[in-house]
Image 1 (cartoon, rainbow, N blue to C red):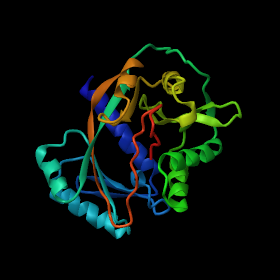
Image 2 (cartoon, rainbow, N blue to C red; image 1 turned 135 degrees about the vertical axis):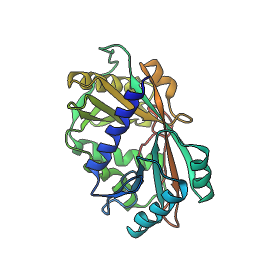
Image 3 (spheres, rainbow, N blue to C red; image 1 turned 60 degrees about the vertical axis):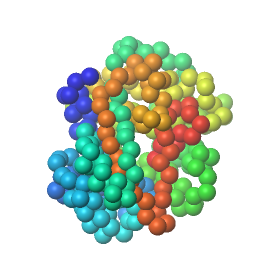
Length: 274
């Protein structure tokens, strides 16, 4: 683990967030991404903290910008240390605090692939992704499912969608790979295996395919994010990933605006990333 690797991963994440946003509002201490076409998708509508600021300042900024956009919920992401004042301040303002662990691949340069993986077009994934959302998080509105699925059309140019297909040719496991060869950085995101196909090594195959493609593109840093308390950290470690550092996320639901935040662990009982 090096501070420079962590800083590169964080900078890459901020760049991806800006590139896929419909609009960006720069604010003291960070920036806000907004997408009025996908108001239920919290990952597209949130405050990203990039510099020093107090909890009170960040809460006020989130209320101002996200509230003006007509959003009842609030999401604030902090990549880096979150001291006691920040956690206490957000908690006092009604936010729920959560953590993410950034992990980088440091395993074999040519990892084994226990199942065939291929790049697929986004159109091939949209139906399976919506079905996966409906299976894992029942009870949402049709509009919510449509937005949680359609948000993938916002991915930055160059995103690779990798999938394992079932006997009928339909994707049954998939992930996304964001590449920036000019920076030498890649991110693997949204790893999912549908329930009927779990425990077959498909997640490991997707990760292996992702790190292979990243290396072939000239990326010397390939990372992912995982919930350290409810995600498959042990699996990632066995596959060659190691810890870079933590990030923090603060969420506050609003009336009628609660959106589930399912854990995104591969081959886990409820694993539909948003």
